[in-house]
Image (cartoon, rainbow, N blue to C red; front, side, top):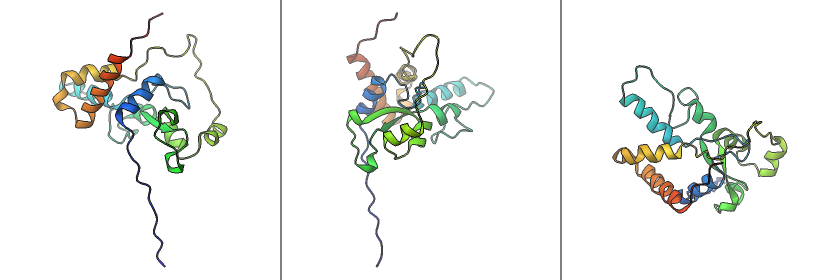
Length: 177
């Protein structure tokens, strides 16, 4: 008898939902509390550097976040993680989604949040001045460059640009202290 495996087809999390979760969480990893980075921003920063004929190779962006080609993204790329893993019945509802860095997301894998938290107790980043208040994962940089080079953006990046701009337009800027 031949064994057939049923593979769960994962639906994509809508970009609008991802944008809301990233901003809700302040672009800070839920698990390690480090700031995360919006990868497309670094993609276009790298292109900006290359377009201006900088003489040295830079390692800002790689599609697969390879450590040798994009060390910041290897660790700190902003991703969306499921608290209750999708593969174990978790939903794409915002209440089940958190911002995570690429490293924590890979470490957690499909383990339930409680199991991961027990093995990796929270270690808040020590800071003399408190948590980041205005960090946006370089999304503002992406918006600025994206508006200038919109024809170079992929269809998905255009959707990100549209959703980030819509989010920013509908949410007032917090007051600086």
